[in-house]
Image (cartoon, rainbow, N blue to C red; front, side):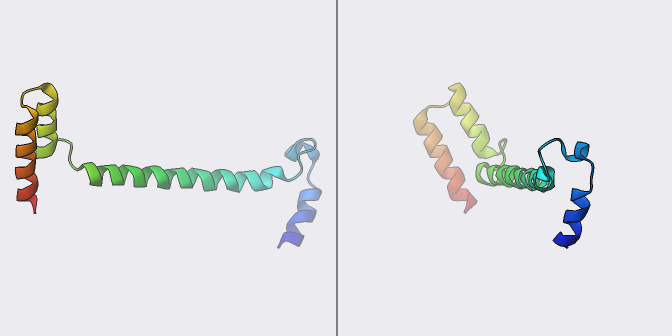
Length: 90
């Protein structure tokens, strides 16, 4: 297959490839798509992992975190309630 493509590439006008570039685009175009698909897979898996590890941000633990951050409850109460929540989950 390569032997059929090379003569076709050689017979193309120079303005298709650009002066002095040769068949560089032949390799860059697939590389672009491979990187684009790779980034899509990476970010979709990262978002899935974050959602799975952190859980629902408005779940019981999320509400408890927000109350602790606002100063509505102190650290000991936060830890006690968090322990109860995690014990009930099992």
